[in-house]
Length: 182
Image 1 (cartoon, one colour):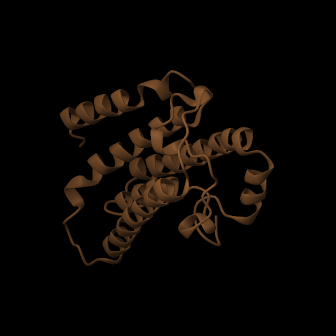
Image 2 (cartoon, rainbow, N blue to C red):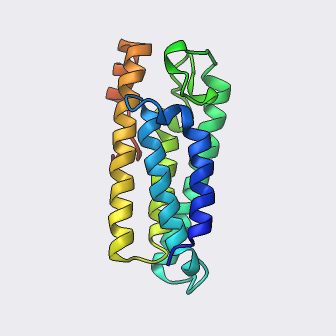
Image 3 (cartoon, one colour):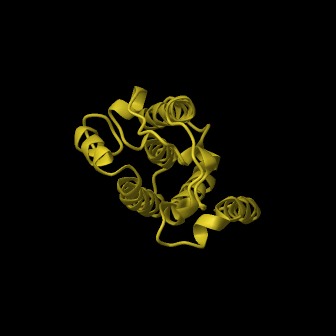
């Protein structure tokens, strides 16, 4: 059973944060919003099970995925801030400020993965999913995975327009989400 008041409050916050992105379905932020919503649903559906049987294999896997998710997002934010530079983009007003880099970040995780922040969201979704597997959460985690893939593909088109051939070369040398795999 989902906690409707919490879902409503967090959805309203996500709408507020994503209001500019939601106005432009041609940009990556539009699709990212729906991935956020799916992750929120998975977390709220599985929240009652987070502390139940903490040492089962699925809960241990879940914990490792959640921890890795935190490491990925923190590292990615640090890399964007320290290596990416910043530039206001008139054609990307719906982006968050940290997204508008002037350099292709290729250090740290970015050496292996083009989208470590989306990787983080993917790991978060799957980590929350493994807390309590049901047909509904299976559907949700697969939908979130597809939405994150779509988000990344749209963002890559934006990056090619901004960075040109350098981004195409970078994309050929790296994976989208998981080092050496995906």
